[in-house]
Length: 285
Ligand SMILES: NC(=O)c1ccc[n+]([C@@H]2O[C@H](COP(=O)([O-])OP(=O)(O)OC[C@H]3O[C@@H](n4cnc5c(N)ncnc54)[C@H](OP(=O)(O)O)[C@@H]3O)[C@@H](O)[C@H]2O)c1
Image (cartoon, rainbow, N blue to C red; front, side, top):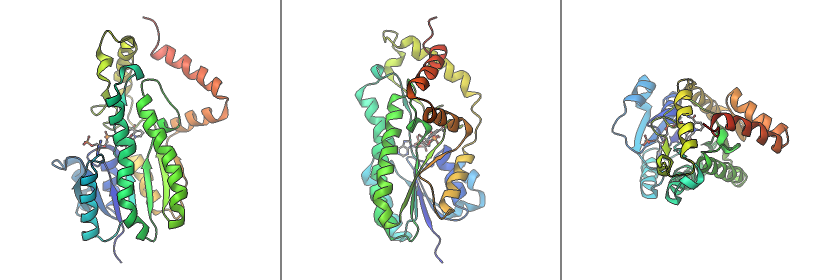
Protein backbone atom coordinates (compact mmCIF):
# COMPACT_ATOMS: atom_id res chain seq x y z
CA UNK A 1 0.00 0.00 0.00
CA UNK A 2 1.21 3.53 -0.78
CA UNK A 3 2.52 5.46 2.19
CA UNK A 4 0.36 8.31 3.45
CA UNK A 5 1.72 11.78 2.67
CA UNK A 6 2.10 14.65 5.16
CA UNK A 7 2.91 18.27 4.33
CA UNK A 8 4.42 20.44 7.08
CA UNK A 9 5.18 24.15 6.89
CA UNK A 10 8.12 25.87 8.61
CA UNK A 11 10.45 22.88 8.98
CA UNK A 12 13.77 24.72 9.33
CA UNK A 13 13.59 24.67 13.15
CA UNK A 14 11.43 24.12 16.24
CA UNK A 15 8.17 22.17 16.12
CA UNK A 16 8.28 21.88 12.32
CA UNK A 17 11.70 20.21 12.16
CA UNK A 18 10.89 17.83 15.05
CA UNK A 19 7.50 16.93 13.57
CA UNK A 20 8.93 16.26 10.11
CA UNK A 21 11.56 13.96 11.64
CA UNK A 22 9.01 12.00 13.69
CA UNK A 23 6.39 11.70 10.95
CA UNK A 24 9.06 10.38 8.58
CA UNK A 25 8.92 7.14 10.60
CA UNK A 26 5.45 6.37 9.16
CA UNK A 27 4.69 8.86 6.40
CA UNK A 28 6.16 10.27 3.25
CA UNK A 29 6.90 13.79 4.49
CA UNK A 30 6.96 16.98 2.46
CA UNK A 31 8.99 19.28 4.72
CA UNK A 32 8.66 22.83 3.47
CA UNK A 33 10.76 25.81 4.49
CA UNK A 34 11.68 29.28 3.25
CA UNK A 35 15.35 28.44 2.84
CA UNK A 36 16.25 24.78 2.29
CA UNK A 37 20.01 25.42 2.02
CA UNK A 38 20.90 24.07 5.48
CA UNK A 39 19.37 20.71 6.35
CA UNK A 40 21.76 19.84 9.18
CA UNK A 41 19.11 19.93 11.91
CA UNK A 42 16.50 17.99 9.95
CA UNK A 43 19.06 15.33 8.98
CA UNK A 44 20.24 14.98 12.57
CA UNK A 45 16.70 14.68 13.93
CA UNK A 46 15.43 12.28 11.26
CA UNK A 47 18.49 10.01 11.17
CA UNK A 48 17.82 6.96 8.98
CA UNK A 49 14.29 8.22 8.18
CA UNK A 50 15.61 11.26 6.33
CA UNK A 51 15.12 9.41 3.03
CA UNK A 52 11.36 9.61 3.64
CA UNK A 53 11.54 13.41 3.67
CA UNK A 54 11.20 15.51 0.55
CA UNK A 55 12.36 19.05 1.32
CA UNK A 56 10.73 21.84 -0.70
CA UNK A 57 11.11 25.59 -0.70
CA UNK A 58 7.96 27.35 0.42
CA UNK A 59 7.19 30.71 1.97
CA UNK A 60 3.59 30.56 3.24
CA UNK A 61 3.02 34.18 2.21
CA UNK A 62 3.84 33.38 -1.42
CA UNK A 63 0.91 31.74 -3.30
CA UNK A 64 3.10 31.07 -6.36
CA UNK A 65 5.64 29.05 -4.35
CA UNK A 66 2.77 27.21 -2.64
CA UNK A 67 1.24 26.27 -5.98
CA UNK A 68 4.61 24.98 -7.23
CA UNK A 69 4.86 22.71 -4.18
CA UNK A 70 1.31 21.45 -4.75
CA UNK A 71 2.03 20.71 -8.42
CA UNK A 72 5.13 18.72 -7.43
CA UNK A 73 3.22 16.74 -4.76
CA UNK A 74 0.43 15.98 -7.24
CA UNK A 75 2.95 14.79 -9.80
CA UNK A 76 5.26 12.80 -7.50
CA UNK A 77 2.90 11.47 -4.82
CA UNK A 78 -0.58 11.89 -6.27
CA UNK A 79 -2.00 12.22 -2.76
CA UNK A 80 -1.99 14.26 0.44
CA UNK A 81 -3.38 13.01 3.75
CA UNK A 82 -2.07 15.34 6.48
CA UNK A 83 -1.44 19.08 6.51
CA UNK A 84 0.39 20.56 9.50
CA UNK A 85 0.10 24.37 9.41
CA UNK A 86 3.06 25.13 11.64
CA UNK A 87 5.03 28.07 10.18
CA UNK A 88 4.76 31.15 12.35
CA UNK A 89 6.43 34.29 13.61
CA UNK A 90 5.98 36.40 16.72
CA UNK A 91 5.79 40.16 16.23
CA UNK A 92 5.95 41.69 19.70
CA UNK A 93 5.43 45.21 20.96
CA UNK A 94 2.83 47.50 22.48
CA UNK A 95 0.06 48.44 20.03
CA UNK A 96 1.09 52.08 19.75
CA UNK A 97 4.68 51.06 19.04
CA UNK A 98 3.66 48.65 16.28
CA UNK A 99 3.29 50.04 12.77
CA UNK A 100 0.45 48.84 10.59
CA UNK A 101 3.03 47.18 8.36
CA UNK A 102 4.48 45.21 11.30
CA UNK A 103 1.02 43.99 12.30
CA UNK A 104 0.26 43.06 8.68
CA UNK A 105 3.42 40.94 8.50
CA UNK A 106 2.25 39.06 11.62
CA UNK A 107 -1.15 38.33 10.06
CA UNK A 108 0.38 37.56 6.65
CA UNK A 109 2.31 34.61 8.06
CA UNK A 110 0.27 33.28 10.98
CA UNK A 111 -3.19 33.77 9.51
CA UNK A 112 -3.28 34.44 5.76
CA UNK A 113 -0.32 32.05 5.31
CA UNK A 114 -2.38 29.25 6.86
CA UNK A 115 -5.30 30.11 4.59
CA UNK A 116 -3.13 30.17 1.42
CA UNK A 117 -1.63 26.76 2.21
CA UNK A 118 -4.92 25.19 3.33
CA UNK A 119 -6.73 26.43 0.22
CA UNK A 120 -4.05 24.95 -2.04
CA UNK A 121 -4.12 21.58 -0.22
CA UNK A 122 -7.89 21.04 -0.06
CA UNK A 123 -8.22 19.48 -3.52
CA UNK A 124 -5.83 16.62 -2.67
CA UNK A 125 -6.95 16.32 0.96
CA UNK A 126 -10.55 15.74 -0.18
CA UNK A 127 -9.39 12.70 -2.15
CA UNK A 128 -7.80 11.12 0.93
CA UNK A 129 -9.88 8.53 2.83
CA UNK A 130 -8.64 9.89 6.19
CA UNK A 131 -7.43 13.48 5.89
CA UNK A 132 -6.68 15.90 8.67
CA UNK A 133 -5.46 19.45 9.09
CA UNK A 134 -3.46 20.16 12.24
CA UNK A 135 -3.17 23.85 13.06
CA UNK A 136 -0.35 24.94 15.34
CA UNK A 137 -2.07 27.62 17.35
CA UNK A 138 -1.00 28.64 20.85
CA UNK A 139 -2.26 29.27 24.33
CA UNK A 140 -1.99 32.87 23.01
CA UNK A 141 -5.00 32.03 20.82
CA UNK A 142 -7.16 31.68 23.92
CA UNK A 143 -5.73 34.15 26.43
CA UNK A 144 -4.03 37.45 25.66
CA UNK A 145 -0.96 39.12 27.13
CA UNK A 146 0.24 42.72 26.87
CA UNK A 147 3.11 43.27 24.37
CA UNK A 148 1.78 40.34 22.30
CA UNK A 149 -1.39 41.89 20.88
CA UNK A 150 -0.46 41.29 17.24
CA UNK A 151 0.55 37.67 17.92
CA UNK A 152 -2.59 37.13 20.03
CA UNK A 153 -4.75 38.53 17.23
CA UNK A 154 -3.15 36.21 14.66
CA UNK A 155 -3.75 33.13 16.81
CA UNK A 156 -7.29 34.17 17.82
CA UNK A 157 -8.05 34.61 14.12
CA UNK A 158 -6.59 31.17 13.47
CA UNK A 159 -8.76 29.65 16.23
CA UNK A 160 -11.97 31.16 14.81
CA UNK A 161 -11.09 30.21 11.26
CA UNK A 162 -10.21 26.63 12.25
CA UNK A 163 -13.42 26.12 14.21
CA UNK A 164 -15.40 27.27 11.20
CA UNK A 165 -13.32 25.14 8.80
CA UNK A 166 -13.91 22.09 10.99
CA UNK A 167 -17.68 22.39 10.33
CA UNK A 168 -17.17 23.07 6.64
CA UNK A 169 -14.85 20.13 6.02
CA UNK A 170 -16.66 17.54 8.15
CA UNK A 171 -18.95 16.52 5.23
CA UNK A 172 -15.78 15.72 3.23
CA UNK A 173 -14.35 13.57 6.02
CA UNK A 174 -11.49 15.99 6.76
CA UNK A 175 -10.79 16.45 10.47
CA UNK A 176 -9.41 19.76 11.75
CA UNK A 177 -7.75 20.37 15.12
CA UNK A 178 -5.80 23.05 16.98
CA UNK A 179 -2.64 22.36 18.99
CA UNK A 180 -2.15 25.03 21.67
CA UNK A 181 1.30 24.93 23.27
CA UNK A 182 2.51 27.35 25.94
CA UNK A 183 6.24 28.20 25.89
CA UNK A 184 8.63 25.62 24.43
CA UNK A 185 12.32 25.95 23.66
CA UNK A 186 12.39 26.95 19.98
CA UNK A 187 13.64 29.99 18.09
CA UNK A 188 10.34 31.90 18.08
CA UNK A 189 10.90 33.82 21.32
CA UNK A 190 14.66 33.81 20.86
CA UNK A 191 16.58 34.64 17.70
CA UNK A 192 13.39 34.68 15.57
CA UNK A 193 11.52 37.08 17.87
CA UNK A 194 10.67 40.35 16.11
CA UNK A 195 10.20 43.37 18.36
CA UNK A 196 8.54 46.56 17.08
CA UNK A 197 11.12 49.07 15.85
CA UNK A 198 9.59 51.85 17.95
CA UNK A 199 10.00 49.79 21.15
CA UNK A 200 13.68 50.82 21.09
CA UNK A 201 12.87 54.51 20.73
CA UNK A 202 13.37 56.32 24.08
CA UNK A 203 10.63 58.77 22.99
CA UNK A 204 8.01 56.03 22.97
CA UNK A 205 5.65 56.29 25.98
CA UNK A 206 6.14 52.51 26.36
CA UNK A 207 9.95 52.58 26.19
CA UNK A 208 10.43 51.80 29.90
CA UNK A 209 7.89 48.93 29.82
CA UNK A 210 9.44 47.46 26.68
CA UNK A 211 12.86 47.55 28.33
CA UNK A 212 11.43 45.76 31.38
CA UNK A 213 9.87 43.08 29.20
CA UNK A 214 13.15 42.61 27.32
CA UNK A 215 15.09 42.06 30.53
CA UNK A 216 12.28 39.85 31.91
CA UNK A 217 12.48 37.76 28.71
CA UNK A 218 16.28 37.50 28.99
CA UNK A 219 15.97 36.12 32.52
CA UNK A 220 13.08 33.79 31.74
CA UNK A 221 14.68 32.37 28.58
CA UNK A 222 17.19 30.32 30.59
CA UNK A 223 14.28 28.52 32.27
CA UNK A 224 12.47 27.60 29.03
CA UNK A 225 13.69 24.06 28.68
CA UNK A 226 10.59 22.26 27.41
CA UNK A 227 11.60 20.35 24.30
CA UNK A 228 9.66 20.83 21.03
CA UNK A 229 9.83 17.03 20.80
CA UNK A 230 6.82 16.84 23.14
CA UNK A 231 4.67 18.83 20.72
CA UNK A 232 5.96 16.78 17.77
CA UNK A 233 5.00 13.57 19.61
CA UNK A 234 1.47 14.87 20.15
CA UNK A 235 1.18 15.74 16.45
CA UNK A 236 2.41 12.24 15.57
CA UNK A 237 -0.33 10.76 17.80
CA UNK A 238 -2.94 13.01 16.17
CA UNK A 239 -1.94 11.70 12.75
CA UNK A 240 -2.76 8.15 13.84
CA UNK A 241 -5.76 8.51 16.19
CA UNK A 242 -9.06 7.61 14.55
CA UNK A 243 -11.02 10.55 15.99
CA UNK A 244 -9.32 13.74 17.07
CA UNK A 245 -10.63 16.50 19.36
CA UNK A 246 -10.87 20.16 18.37
CA UNK A 247 -8.26 21.57 20.78
CA UNK A 248 -5.15 20.23 22.50
CA UNK A 249 -3.55 22.10 25.39
CA UNK A 250 -0.25 20.38 25.97
CA UNK A 251 1.29 21.25 29.29
CA UNK A 252 0.06 21.90 32.81
CA UNK A 253 0.96 25.62 32.59
CA UNK A 254 -1.43 26.07 29.64
CA UNK A 255 -4.11 23.96 31.32
CA UNK A 256 -3.93 26.04 34.52
CA UNK A 257 -4.10 29.39 32.70
CA UNK A 258 -6.95 28.42 30.40
CA UNK A 259 -8.71 26.51 33.20
CA UNK A 260 -8.55 29.54 35.51
CA UNK A 261 -9.83 31.84 32.77
CA UNK A 262 -12.78 29.53 32.10
CA UNK A 263 -13.63 28.90 35.76
CA UNK A 264 -13.71 32.36 37.29
CA UNK A 265 -15.46 35.53 36.06
CA UNK A 266 -13.24 37.30 33.54
CA UNK A 267 -12.96 40.44 35.71
CA UNK A 268 -11.40 38.37 38.51
CA UNK A 269 -8.99 36.74 36.05
CA UNK A 270 -8.15 40.21 34.71
CA UNK A 271 -7.36 41.48 38.23
CA UNK A 272 -5.09 38.49 39.00
CA UNK A 273 -3.20 38.84 35.71
CA UNK A 274 -2.97 42.65 36.05
CA UNK A 275 -1.37 42.29 39.48
CA UNK A 276 1.19 39.95 37.91
CA UNK A 277 1.91 42.37 35.04
CA UNK A 278 2.21 45.32 37.46
CA UNK A 279 4.99 43.42 39.26
CA UNK A 280 6.76 42.22 36.11
CA UNK A 281 6.25 44.93 33.50
CA UNK A 282 4.49 48.07 34.65
CA UNK A 283 6.23 48.72 37.96
CA UNK A 284 7.62 52.21 38.46
CA UNK A 285 11.39 52.26 38.74
N1 LIG B 1 7.69 27.68 20.82
C1 LIG B 1 6.65 28.09 21.48
O1 LIG B 1 6.76 28.38 22.66
C2 LIG B 1 5.31 28.18 20.79
C3 LIG B 1 4.17 28.24 21.60
C4 LIG B 1 2.94 28.29 21.00
C5 LIG B 1 2.81 28.24 19.63
N2 LIG B 1 3.93 28.19 18.85
C6 LIG B 1 3.75 28.14 17.39
O2 LIG B 1 4.50 27.08 16.87
C7 LIG B 1 4.76 27.31 15.47
C8 LIG B 1 6.22 26.97 15.18
O3 LIG B 1 7.06 27.86 15.88
P1 LIG B 1 8.34 27.37 16.69
O4 LIG B 1 8.04 27.58 18.12
O5 LIG B 1 8.78 26.04 16.24
O6 LIG B 1 9.37 28.53 16.30
P2 LIG B 1 10.62 28.60 15.31
O7 LIG B 1 11.71 27.73 15.77
O8 LIG B 1 10.88 30.05 15.17
O9 LIG B 1 10.04 28.03 13.95
C9 LIG B 1 9.19 28.77 13.12
C10 LIG B 1 9.26 28.22 11.73
O10 LIG B 1 8.35 28.95 10.90
C11 LIG B 1 9.07 29.34 9.74
N3 LIG B 1 8.50 30.51 9.09
C12 LIG B 1 8.39 31.78 9.55
N4 LIG B 1 7.82 32.56 8.62
C13 LIG B 1 7.58 31.77 7.54
C14 LIG B 1 7.02 31.98 6.26
N5 LIG B 1 6.58 33.18 5.87
N6 LIG B 1 6.92 30.92 5.41
C15 LIG B 1 7.36 29.70 5.77
N7 LIG B 1 7.93 29.44 6.96
C16 LIG B 1 8.02 30.47 7.83
C17 LIG B 1 10.49 29.60 10.22
O11 LIG B 1 11.35 29.59 9.10
P3 LIG B 1 12.65 30.51 8.94
O12 LIG B 1 13.79 29.68 9.45
O13 LIG B 1 12.71 30.75 7.47
O14 LIG B 1 12.43 31.76 9.73
C18 LIG B 1 10.65 28.37 11.12
O15 LIG B 1 10.92 27.23 10.35
C19 LIG B 1 4.40 28.77 15.23
O16 LIG B 1 3.16 28.83 14.55
C20 LIG B 1 4.26 29.35 16.63
O17 LIG B 1 3.37 30.44 16.68
C21 LIG B 1 5.19 28.16 19.41
